[in-house]
Amino acid sequence: LLVRERVLIEQNTAQNSSGAVNNAGTATFTDNVVVRRNTSQNGGGAMWTNSSSNTIITGSASFTENTAVGAGGAIRNTGTLTLSENGSITNNTAGTSGGGISNSGTLVGAVSGGKVNNNTPENIHPELLP
Image (cartoon, rainbow, N blue to C red; front, top):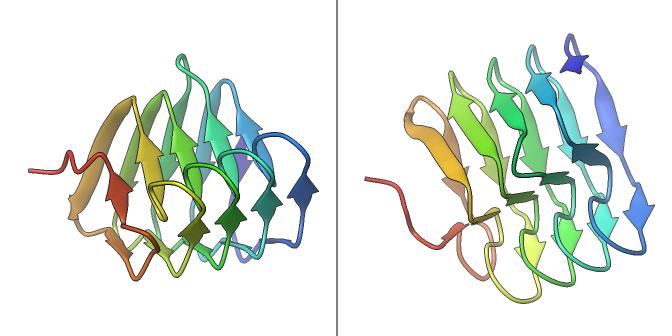
């Protein structure tokens, strides 16, 4: 899945997991893509990534104002998630943990140009970044 060039993914709701995107393969979000105001009644307000998935957020793509009743206000990651080159995860809310990202997979980035901030209750759970 390649999502690029000013795409808006907005106001989707899931009764279970992944308010907007459930990634079971490879997904790249780039070139000013905005994923916002999505809701999940479980985890992954905007996106759930499964254990075999590879997700890249780059090129000014942003995940913002998403909500999960459970973990991962923006993203519940169990695969590999790379955040780089001005990709951002901001202003998301989770009911339990990981307002920005709830991570039990592999997290790459946020130190290579991406940002994760202003998420509630915390930006990343568990805190795994160097």
